[in-house]
Image (cartoon, rainbow, N blue to C red; front, side):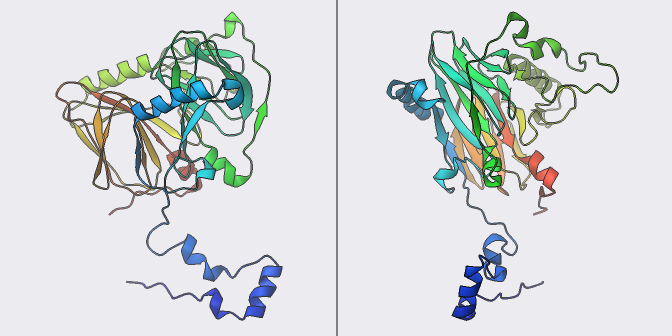
Length: 352
């Protein structure tokens, strides 16, 4: 077995040499190399963690009493991983989760930003997101895309609080020094822009006709209805062999690529009594329970999850999902950074 050499330390260098290097703003890389690139295993700062929705919801509603939407712009409680620097606003090194509240009659102002955002609706009705003038209704379980640099705002025409989970890739953008927001005015929309993507892509396997060579929009479908995804999960659960996991990916209907280029969104259904072991990989993963209850075991530690609960799974962890219920299915959303890691050539699934 190969043994990595013992590298020299900064203390072994003459003080005057270190001072000259500091004056030039350079460092002897070999003295810090093992801190960022250790032998045999990656540096892992993020830890596995479980955020219970019932408790988060209580504090979010309290925030609604304390902070008007005008003072917050977006009234969000950020889910911060205990192993990461809170200032990074990161749930995992590449993924942000935050719980957002909008109350009846409120309207969050229009803006756009470099990071992509996805809304996963947890409760309420009557609210909407407007993306580049397209008014997208929100219902529990729906995914609403806000692609990079797209104008968007939120409004609520219903009667009860609307709560959703924001999922952003800004932890990827911040280290690149490219993350910023541009404020704007409230968007306007006409009747012909109401959920237009849902009309154009209503039937799986077909897309609006375009002459060959004409490029479709980058993000043609911005609202993925949970009612249809749920129906597809249930049908697949019934049709598949009981030993085959039920797992569906959210995709761009024109290209077949992931719905958002940096993050992969997928829906899982576990039948009553079913247990699924997920292959270890370099991906950062988040799980969000949409329906039912189940247990997520991360490196042997169990997290019992109910509706709205979010669980962070760090890289290279062993994960097992178990639905111990006798009758009800467990349906949950999985978010991971596999697309980004794959594009960079970083993604791996260790043999051991």
